[in-house]
Length: 589
Image (cartoon, rainbow, N blue to C red; front, side, top):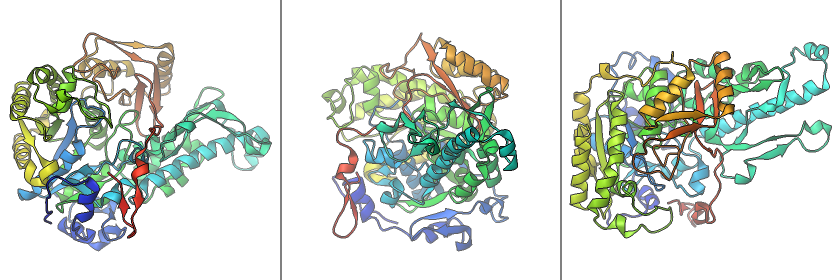
């Protein structure tokens, strides 16, 4: 599907709306799927049935090559992982490979806030872009409804147990759960940035309105239900995971689950369609699975296992993306997602920008919405020389897992040839098998062909037997935390606040000690402190609190203050979004 390229490059929305898209049934048929394998959501979107995994047409096929796209520690502007993911997929298609993109669905909260969309950019995008960034097929709404059904069930149970004795409850087929209102950990969610709802009091009114208590709202993609959607491997597995979710504790200090509350089955019913991956396309007509969108700090920040499993049976190359940098999303991709799925990556693509490396070398602060300082737009080799250490450290982190690393220099118009050469040279000195400049934003697949060739070469020489996890699950929770802190973050030691010590002990006693660790920390530094750039060393990593996502299957320590409900900026992105006279979306990036 040719895309006519214009210079200067128009806005993402203008490019997306000028594209000639293929009917999604054509995309499905290019993968060997028929109309019986999909549910159509209009002309350009579809859901793929999970039965494809057991279909004799595909079941015994060898898996395709499995590539994870990650990045160096980013600036607040992001360094173009999704754009690179899509551009690489398009380039592989031009080279005659059947390539498939697998990425997360973005939350509408940040889309209407300040972050913008997540469909890629320039001539490397997923289309239709408006659908991608908004409702898509309603999966996030299903997560919201399932999550909030649980929240309503919790408060209703507390109310009714306050009003009935044990005999009355038994007569209704219920037993007393004795949920401690002060120990409920489950929060309500919505897909809007609304800081005013971070901390709220519910149950105000008369006695029939429930017991007043303090709680809060999270953004929908921070729900454990979303983390489960991304990590589940079947409808049966999802139902079991939903039942295992711990919603809080009883007055006797025992964990209370969704299964005990009797709500897990209804939640599974709400999620029964959301579990099917969404099929879309790139600007150049390659298939793209867009499915699940868990947070990358308190959750694992990766798209769904099911989408990857299906794609690996249908394609030669599956290009997926993990959230934030190599120290966060990629580490969780390896130690949580791959451990759950049993899949092994063939190659890691590490996205680097000269802009970010200059920041790590001591460049001026980068702020979204403000023009870049001349240190970033003019050639500055001394600044870059200091900053490449961050990229080299991220290469070392990826190599801990025994997977070859290809560095993709996501080029901006103001980057010079000398700067690109320095990044490529220092990347290879750090152990990358290749480092190449890629201009997919401006040129689409044509601009990423050198990167695609490097990835093909790396995959051809990759040995799955070399893959290894960072830690065994048999380690104690503290040992796993300290392994990540020292080997990935470069910390010298870990300090636990008393609350965290108590929580770790309680989780071990409750039988949760064999779960993997999902560290929650800033994405703006390899450390816990966002202002520490480059490669921080000789510091102590603080663990202030530890929480459990038992249904999703991980423990998440908090290394700092984690905002699970973003707020709107003074001039939100939604102020530019509208419909024109023809009913088309305008102002969406």
